[in-house]
Structures are given as C-alpha cells and as structure tokens.
Length: 294
Image (tube, rainbow, N blue to C red; front, side, top):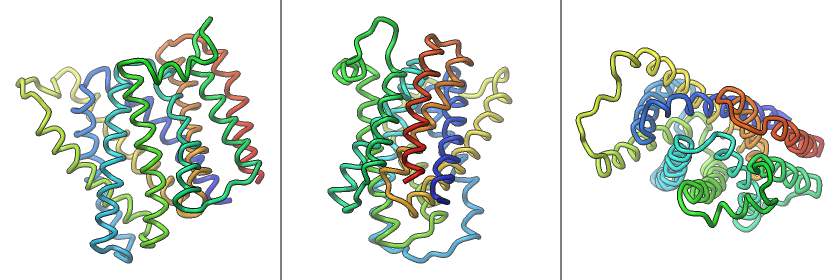
C-alpha cells in the first residue's frame, strides 16, 4: 500500500500549497504568480536529474509529455484565477468531481477496472466535497447549478475537464514509455515554464507595474519558494503513486487535499459554515478508508 501513503502525502502537500497560493494571490495577479512559480519550480527541480536516467525518453514520449503539460498548465492557471477571485471553500470542492471523470476515462482508454468498494469510496469523497460547496439555505443541487453559471465557476469546470484528461495521460505515459517519475516531473516542470511564458508574452499587458515592491518582496519571495518546494513534492508523490495504482483511485485520495485545504483555509481566511465542512470530513475520510481497505 505504498501508493496509498504517497497519495495521502501528495494530498497534504497539495493542501499546503493551495493555502499559501491563496495568500500570495491576494498580492499578485494569477498569471504573474503562475509564471514566477513555474520558473522557481523548474529551477529547483533541475538537480533531481542527477538521481534518474533517461530511459523511455524519445520523440514520442516528449510529444505526449508536451500535450499532457499543456492540459495541466491550462488547468493550473484556471484554478489560480478562480482561487484569486473566489473563497477557497467554494473553489476547491468542485475539483473533487475529477475522480469520477478520471475513472470513466481510465476505464475507456486504459481498461482499468474498479471494485465495488472503490466505487463507493470515490462516491463518498465526491459527495462530501460537494457538500462543502453548499451554503446555508441553498438547494442540494447547488453544486450542479454552478456549472451552468457564468464567471469563475465555469473556469473551475474547465479546469476539472483538463485535470481529468491530464491525469489519464499521466498513467498512459508512465506505462507505455516507462519513464521514471523524477524525469517525468522535471520535464513537465520545464514544459510548464515554457507554456506559461508563452501565455504571458501573448496575453500580458505591459503596464510597467512592479510585481515585487519593496514592502512585500521579502514575504513574497519566501512564500513562493516554500510553495515551489511543496509543489515539487506533491507532484513527485502523485506521479509515483499513479505509477503503482489505478489513476482514478490515486486522484480520489489526492482530492483529500480539498478537505485539508478547506478545513484549514476556512479558519485562516475566516470563511463561513465551518462545522458543515467538518461534517463533510466524515464522508470524505470514510470514502478514503474504503479505498484503502480494498
């Protein structure tokens, strides 16, 4: 069950990153932050190449990695944009629907089968995190209504689709080309930097505004450095776990990061309905345990 603990570790690190990202996004624009973070992550992950070989690296695998990285990069930018403009408790829970989409795609594309316990566990995780999206006196169908509403919820829905497709490609690339998780993550980080730089150059309006002012530079530099280290950690743990277990199950457990981030973030950013979020924890943890026991 090494993959289980790797997925849980990835979830914890991902939650830590989400909370810190929310704080930094109060100071920076989403695209500025995304580009800076990708540059730091790429730089810090480079020394990891000393611990891996180049087995499986060829023109075909690089092409698949590039396509997968484009999907993942666009999803990350969507999430950062929504996270900057919405409460953390109403942004991240919607992403918990991804295990269902991933499981379906993995079944169709990869032929991965899920047991009854795994399906029930995934359903409980999704149900619990959807409850986190509800506000007082709102309909139980609220999580589905937001997908039809304009604005940032549509951005989250776009991220949901992109993440699901990207996760299935993770498994496909690891199985087909047998690339080591470290090499996979490092190359992906390089692609992220190139993709975000291209997006920045084509969309950013150069107003002359300084990203780092004297008042906030030290705080932002330290926080972004921490986020970068945590990001490398959760990406490595997720890819290693994906290599060892069905991708739908791994992403289900990874979505526990939503729970951790919302419970901590709701207190930190003084968001409402804290006890309801605690109650949803029972459903999510129960779902994770069902997956683990299988």
